[in-house]
Image 1 (cartoon, rainbow, N blue to C red):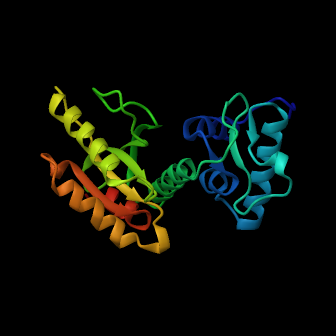
Image 2: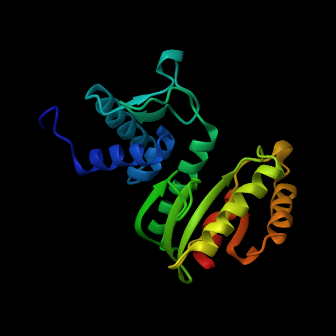
Image 3: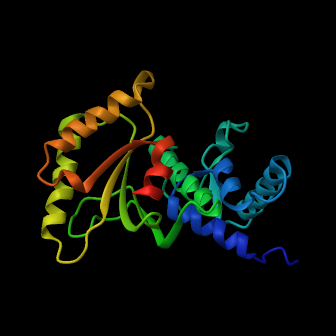
Length: 223
């Protein structure tokens, strides 16, 4: 094999790093190398990522720090202007990885190309992740990853922007799911309930759903 030949898996990895903006070695391994044993898949994944780094397609954020962090390096496109790891971005990648794993398991089907951090239809505000999924029904989703750091006035403002975009839409509008991926002192249920209370005050409350990361795949597959 020529050293600069890119396999279909290479292209898929480059595409996912570009799409997700930040993604860990562990997540890329689960996305593209879940074939044999975890140890063998892990070695193959690391070898491929290092080769793609040498070829100038991707780069690890933590290389300059020395050592390998838990979960492996965080990868970005080589030309990216990102130089710091963002937990929020890694959580988006984690949710996407779980959805892909659920598709492999036959729990749902991903329709169309997912997109990350693009504009809400009819708005100048960005969503975190857009997924069109066939589960119990075919539903287009806007996903908001919530790490418990946003104050409620900011959450309220984002909810209103979604509602305004929904009311202005002339074609079908995605449902919105808030996925709580982190909560201070593990108070996940308190954060979920706080979001639900805020949503209940909105004019179009039925547009929104709230769950934790561990509940997300089931919610997306069965709604």
